[in-house]
Image 1 (cartoon, rainbow, N blue to C red):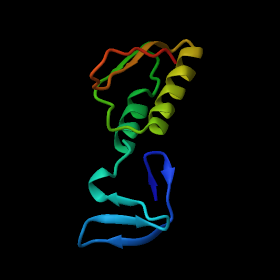
Image 2 (image 1 turned 90 degrees about the horizontal axis):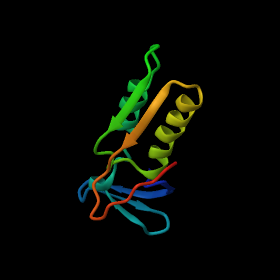
Image 3 (image 1 turned 135 degrees about the vertical axis):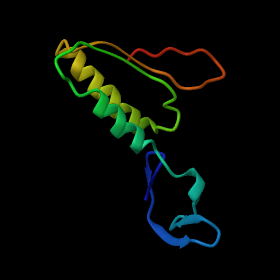
Image 4 (image 1 turned 120 degrees about the vertical axis):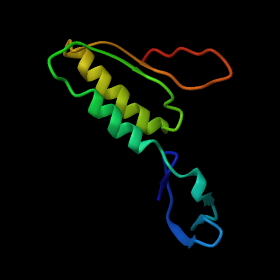
Length: 102
Protein backbone atom coordinates (compact mmCIF):
# COMPACT_ATOMS: atom_id res chain seq x y z
CA UNK A 1 0.00 0.00 0.00
CA UNK A 2 1.32 3.44 -0.89
CA UNK A 3 0.20 6.29 1.37
CA UNK A 4 1.66 9.82 1.44
CA UNK A 5 4.77 8.75 -0.48
CA UNK A 6 5.48 5.82 1.87
CA UNK A 7 5.09 2.14 1.06
CA UNK A 8 3.59 -0.22 3.65
CA UNK A 9 3.22 -3.97 3.81
CA UNK A 10 -0.23 -4.76 5.14
CA UNK A 11 -1.00 -7.27 7.85
CA UNK A 12 -4.72 -6.53 7.97
CA UNK A 13 -7.54 -4.72 6.21
CA UNK A 14 -10.19 -3.89 8.81
CA UNK A 15 -13.38 -3.27 6.84
CA UNK A 16 -15.54 -2.91 9.96
CA UNK A 17 -13.43 -0.05 11.33
CA UNK A 18 -12.42 1.34 7.91
CA UNK A 19 -8.66 1.11 8.32
CA UNK A 20 -5.53 -0.60 7.05
CA UNK A 21 -3.00 -2.00 9.51
CA UNK A 22 0.60 -2.30 8.35
CA UNK A 23 3.05 -4.96 9.49
CA UNK A 24 4.97 -2.27 11.41
CA UNK A 25 1.79 -1.38 13.36
CA UNK A 26 0.95 1.78 11.42
CA UNK A 27 -2.80 2.35 11.24
CA UNK A 28 -4.05 4.10 8.10
CA UNK A 29 -7.71 5.13 8.12
CA UNK A 30 -9.51 4.70 4.79
CA UNK A 31 -10.52 8.37 5.00
CA UNK A 32 -6.88 9.48 4.62
CA UNK A 33 -6.36 7.56 1.39
CA UNK A 34 -5.92 9.41 -1.85
CA UNK A 35 -2.75 11.02 -3.07
CA UNK A 36 -4.32 13.02 -5.85
CA UNK A 37 -3.92 10.43 -8.60
CA UNK A 38 -7.23 11.47 -10.16
CA UNK A 39 -6.11 15.12 -10.11
CA UNK A 40 -2.77 14.07 -11.60
CA UNK A 41 -4.47 12.32 -14.52
CA UNK A 42 -6.65 15.37 -15.14
CA UNK A 43 -3.74 17.83 -14.99
CA UNK A 44 -1.47 15.76 -17.23
CA UNK A 45 -4.32 15.47 -19.73
CA UNK A 46 -4.79 19.26 -19.67
CA UNK A 47 -1.05 19.69 -20.28
CA UNK A 48 -1.19 17.68 -23.51
CA UNK A 49 0.34 19.90 -26.16
CA UNK A 50 -1.96 20.79 -29.05
CA UNK A 51 0.18 23.43 -30.75
CA UNK A 52 -0.89 26.39 -28.63
CA UNK A 53 1.37 27.98 -26.00
CA UNK A 54 0.32 26.75 -22.54
CA UNK A 55 -0.37 29.03 -19.58
CA UNK A 56 -1.28 26.65 -16.75
CA UNK A 57 -2.90 27.60 -13.43
CA UNK A 58 -4.04 24.71 -11.25
CA UNK A 59 -5.95 25.57 -8.08
CA UNK A 60 -6.46 23.40 -5.00
CA UNK A 61 -3.77 20.77 -5.45
CA UNK A 62 -3.75 20.20 -1.69
CA UNK A 63 -4.93 16.60 -2.03
CA UNK A 64 -1.89 15.72 -4.07
CA UNK A 65 1.09 14.14 -2.34
CA UNK A 66 4.53 15.63 -2.91
CA UNK A 67 5.44 12.70 -5.17
CA UNK A 68 2.34 13.30 -7.26
CA UNK A 69 3.04 17.04 -7.49
CA UNK A 70 6.58 16.31 -8.63
CA UNK A 71 5.19 14.48 -11.67
CA UNK A 72 3.25 17.61 -12.65
CA UNK A 73 6.30 19.81 -12.03
CA UNK A 74 8.45 17.48 -14.16
CA UNK A 75 5.93 17.70 -17.01
CA UNK A 76 5.80 21.50 -16.73
CA UNK A 77 9.61 21.71 -16.80
CA UNK A 78 9.67 19.46 -19.85
CA UNK A 79 7.13 21.65 -21.66
CA UNK A 80 9.00 24.81 -20.63
CA UNK A 81 12.31 23.51 -21.95
CA UNK A 82 10.60 22.73 -25.28
CA UNK A 83 9.23 26.28 -25.44
CA UNK A 84 5.63 25.08 -25.11
CA UNK A 85 4.84 26.39 -21.60
CA UNK A 86 4.81 30.12 -20.94
CA UNK A 87 4.17 29.67 -17.19
CA UNK A 88 2.74 27.17 -14.72
CA UNK A 89 1.24 27.89 -11.31
CA UNK A 90 -0.01 25.39 -8.73
CA UNK A 91 -2.01 26.77 -5.83
CA UNK A 92 -2.55 25.05 -2.50
CA UNK A 93 -4.22 26.38 0.68
CA UNK A 94 -1.84 27.59 3.39
CA UNK A 95 -1.85 29.70 6.54
CA UNK A 96 1.25 31.56 5.37
CA UNK A 97 2.33 32.99 2.03
CA UNK A 98 4.96 30.84 0.38
CA UNK A 99 6.22 30.91 -3.20
CA UNK A 100 8.46 28.16 -4.51
CA UNK A 101 10.37 28.25 -7.74
CA UNK A 102 11.03 24.76 -9.08
